[in-house]
Amino acid sequence: SLKQGSIGDLVWNPKHDVLSFSNDRGDHGFVGLYSPVSSELVWVAASVDTDMQPAWSPDGRSLAWVRAMVPAGNVGYSPLDGNMGNRGPDFAIMVADVSLD
Image (cartoon, rainbow, N blue to C red):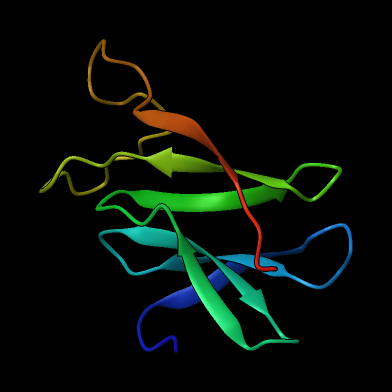
């Protein structure tokens, strides 16, 4: 069950039987999958970073999302705009094969 943070980025898979979403918890965030048929909730590659903006492949077998790596203590820091000098943006595009069958 979900007890922390806020839910956003709701996206159904192509068959409309699994819902992907982001769970922002302030200093980190997860991408999750929920099946209303089985009531199964799965966290996809949970980490200490901020995962967001899930997107399904056209066949529904893969999920891509943005993983933003925010250094601790950087108030006002955005990993997507490269405001930490010459390092550039601190994010990665993640992809995973997913199935709740």
